[in-house]
Amino acid sequence: MKSKGSMTNGVAERNREIQQEKQRRANAQAAANKRAATAAANKKARQDKLDAEATADKKRDQSYEDELRSLEIQKQKLALAKEEARVKRENEFIDQETEAQSCANRCGAI
Image (tube, rainbow, N blue to C red; front, side, top):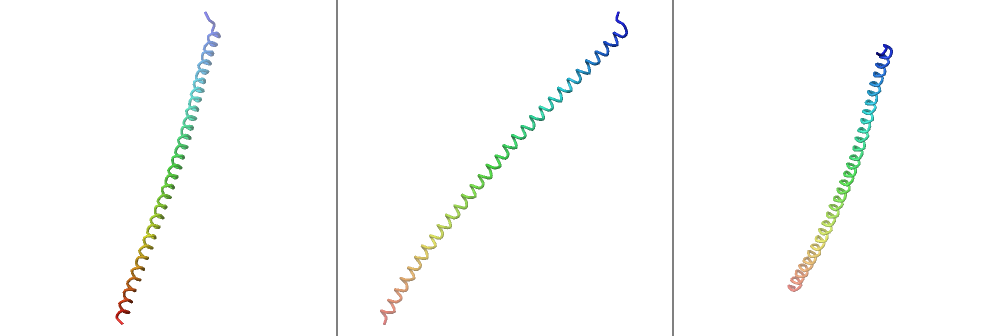
């Protein structure tokens, strides 16, 4: 039969082992939480980087589209100016023809 002191030591030893096991589990849980937090932070950082790249791509694409529109407008303005110059030359030619005919009619009538 075990003595009272021996039983007390056994209970104390068992309590110490239980406390150690609780501490080990708490440490393991804390480590798992830390790993999960690190993984979440890394995932967020990757997503933020992808979002930033997507935003930069979108901005670059919009800038390119804006430049294309601007070039198209310039092209249309040049075509319009060219057409206006052609019409002006035609009008000047018609005016000269009309004036020449008018002069010929007046000069011939004299």
